[in-house]
Length: 170
Image (cartoon, rainbow, N blue to C red; front, side):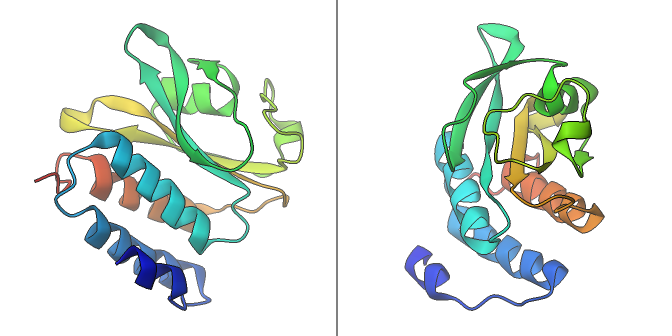
């Protein structure tokens, strides 16, 4: 299945591409109960599907330090290892439990630059069973204004499908 996905030609229109990728992600994850495997697969498949995604990965609530996010599975250059809740875009999205789109990271107060090539960013909270905050999905681009409400809507859908109460974990 994954091999077929790598060679698959995806639609050019962004919403159509997300719809196709969401279906592929669901098919690949079907029956996989391991959270790390699920996150690694989501990051890899999204990274391969959107060229403007320079860095994509998960920051997870650290159960031993619940006021911090710790790096999880990702695709791209070296990421920050830890981010405090409320700090930077990732920490703020986690603390506020909402998606944040940043058209220009240099204009975001308190932005944490893990890689100076990043120009715009979207961060989406990840909720597990019963709405518990698991972490965030962070996506960076080297392009300004690379993300919009279409990205937010589809990334939220994909994360809910992969990790929410209705995720196919068995």
